[in-house]
Length: 158
Image: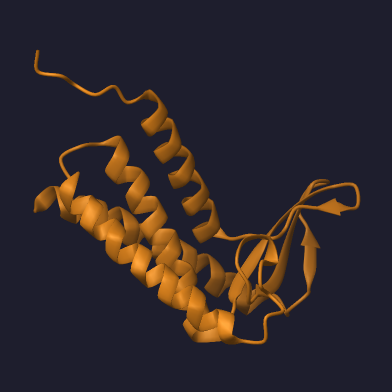
């Protein structure tokens, strides 16, 4: 159980960092307000009622509960997988990042009906969709999961 606690702690740290960063942005920006930080990066406050790349953002409101239910179901599965693989290192770290990110965005959906995004990278006038710390954790977690699955060799007892 102590190893599981470590991974749940990592997920909790992602949630805390995500929510604290959003608290700062919500206190510092009005919706739509943008501040240039570099020539390719802005801070901006936008709310996304959809999923990645604003998928289903104009669906009329039902998507909030769909994404909350989906994220909670996936989170329950992730906790089950964390229990099963708690003694490992790479796999549970990746699962914990995805879990923390998913729950960070669920909190937003329940609080605001949408996810607060604020990181805006761009090249000239082309802007990548704004995202947040939770989205970053999910992305890094999925990349690590894929890398781990592609490089993991089954140990055989010959």
